[in-house]
Image (tube, rainbow, N blue to C red; front, side, top):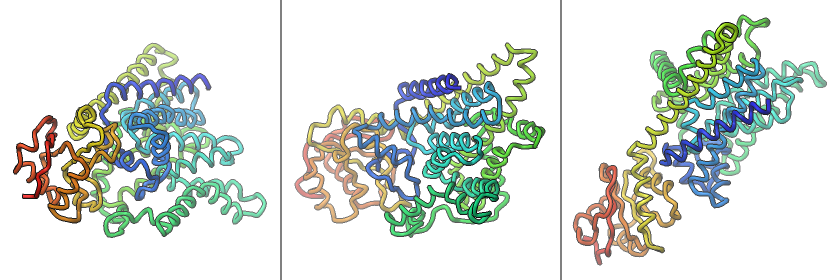
Amino acid sequence: MRGDLVGLVGFGVALRLGLLLLFPVPYGDDSFGRLFFRDSIFLSHWLPLTQAVVFAVSGLGGGIFAVRFCFALIGGLAPAGFYLFLRRLFGRRVALAGGVLFSVNGLYVVLSLMPYQGPLFLGLFYASLALLLERPRLASPAGSLLFGLSALTRYEAWFTAPLLAAWKAWSDRRRAGGAAAAAVRSLLWFGWAPLLWLAASRLHFGQFGGFLFQGPGGNFYGWHPHFDLAWAAGYAGRMLWWAIGFGSPLVLLAPWGVWRLSRRPGGVPGAVRLLLGAGLLVLLFFFFVIGRQQETVFRFVLFPLSILLVAAAAGLEGIWERLARWRPAALRLLLTGSILLLAAGAAYRVRQLDAASEYRTPYRLARYLEAVLPPGETVLVVAQRSARLEDAAPMGYQRLVVASRLDRPRWLTSGLLLQGGPRDWLEWARGRRVRYLVVYERFEPRLASDRFFLDLRLRHPALFRPVFETGGAAVYRVSSWPESPP
């Protein structure tokens, strides 16, 4: 088993580091937010463990590549947890094949090259289940610890915790203290991490659920219950499309895998029933509680996809049994071809993101400005600001800051100038020694400060000379600032 784990982790890490070096452009939105606010652990409703990793690596002096390198390592380690879980259900070869197919899953590869919670959560979650399924079942302190850490990474673990607690309480009902004591012990065993997060929220936000109410107006963004069956069916279809097209076509083996598991002596294993129950609770929340948010498919398919992959491993076991005896060469060809195709598909997805203008533009701007900005001088960015998030810095500005190796104080934006007037803004730019002006051209400015700097550039072309242009953004060198506003 040790050799399997070393080979699996080595393969996964090598794949991710290769992609990281070939396609260096950072991407995503939530991941940019994590990097932009890397000096904080408490960010809105986000659970803290992923941000704690970003905070720690950044605190050690690591830049964006160091953070991405760290998450690539985490992404390479995550399949080990999945492999260990599969070993509780299947033979060694099927578990190893499942671990490798998990490692090259396009969605998980993409999420492991930026600071997303997904790979960290899945690695901790499945490793915890593998330990908890040891004898005596559900009694491993290390399993409880890893499960708690997964519950500090993504909320899907919170839906699983009551099921695990009920399973443990039933198993321990004859111990000292009876059923009631067993229930309390079980809730603490699997609920300590959510309780810790609620207590931390009380200390930081002032109320136990404060992390849920960080949006405009103080409303919980995820609470919009409905009972639109047609919409839920359409959303389920979109999730399945993402699971197959972005994740792995091997999930089509899942129904056959569940059927095969049901034919085993004793029926579907308890661990699989647990996953199916947790998956159902999660899907009901996504379909009917969190509201009609189609753009969330990419993130929310993460956990259901992993459950489909467990069932697909059972289907893979059936193929293995049929081909290993009569056509071993065909089996090797099938597995090798699947791994290569899925790895190529993951690389293609990363390449697409690397080439996307919304991510490549700030990356190229950052590289240019790093080379030309004199010491002690700054850059002012004019970019579109979110109409929904009233206090958020413009996303174009956040992406530029994150992509740059320059210190954050050297990057300024007009999108956060909500007070004062033209004379104040002009003095501010002069006092901050702004030498370059970056303008994202394709947006309609809503803020007076944005309109002021855009108008200033047009009124004084001799003072603002264009020196670089890429992907709908231009850099202007400021020779001097006007003495007074127009």
